[in-house]
Every structure is written in C-alpha cells, then in structure tokens.
Length: 82
Image (cartoon, rainbow, N blue to C red; front, side, top):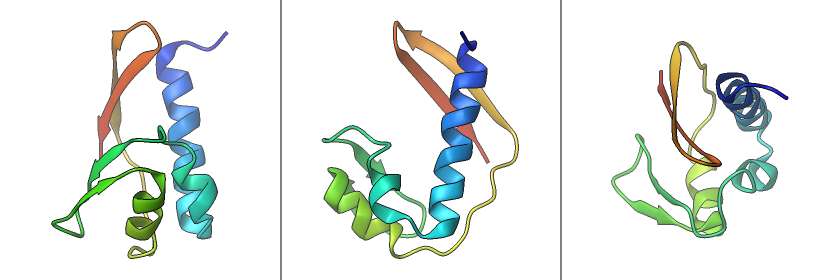
C-alpha cells in the first residue's frame, strides 16, 4: 500500500495528465460530485462536477512542481503546491 504522499502524487499526476490532454469529463470525475472550486483564472465559485467541467474548459495547460501533503482525517488528504 502506498503512503499518503505517494497516493496524492499519483492522483495529482493523473490530474495534470488529464488536464493537459483536454480530458475534461474524466478530470472532473476525480472530484467529489458536489466539489467546490475557486480557481485562479476566474472569480466564480464552481460547484459540482458539471460546473468544474465548465471551468476546466477555460484553461490550456498546467505544470505541477513542488507540493506538500497533510493527512487531515482517515481517508482525507490536503494537498497544496505550485
């Protein structure tokens, strides 16, 4: 079993791969059905997977550099980075 950092890295890598490939629906499916997103390229608060799909269509490419992972509770990780 992977440690939390490695699990988060795997999901983040999949996220970046799907984002850069323009795979919008599978990208949004990585989020909870009722996820909230306050993105960096729009002042709108996006709520739910369909709304996130609309946000992701606004952007072109992403590169993930350094990031940190913290375990918040059983089955819940907080990832932050750039």
